[in-house]
Figure 1 (cartoon, helix red, strand yellow):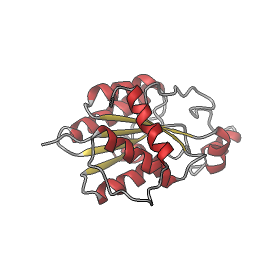
Figure 2 (cartoon, one colour):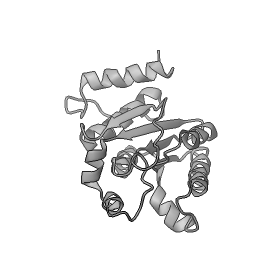
Figure 3 (cartoon, helix red, strand yellow):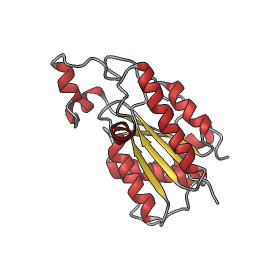
Figure 4 (cartoon, helix red, strand yellow):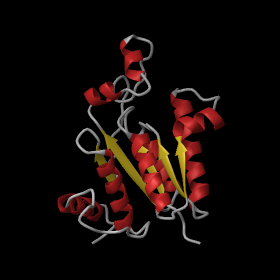
Length: 204
């Protein structure tokens, strides 16, 4: 049985992680790939209601997410995580636990994230109710070797999803999808994906 791939979306709040993760999940299911979306908020609510947002609790939560991904992928099910996971060491730990690991850095400017603010976090922060937003009040450690970098304030959701899928195809984690003139990325984008993967040693 082939192993699944573990796709870990990281980025500051409101950067677009969950939206793109759901798009990738839908696309993989349409291709017949077995996949589970381990939404960090849902995992917290259902499996880790005891955890807050202290450094220790964040460490525990990311460790649990990584362990669930490990269990799924080794049994042939791909897994998706969308979590802020601001510390590099937590994401690197997940990478060490799983063979087929892809880190997706979802980037957007602070101004754009404040404008989106789907959970009202930034508005609460401006009212002085919270002061622990990664990338604003506390550090967000940028990935050093992310397989995918998305700039969601410059590209559409469809383009971002396509870049993730193209990366998975190029590495060989999923079969190639259909091709045609209607592909949602340019030849230049495709070459950038390949150039990044060459730099990381995935392809020659």
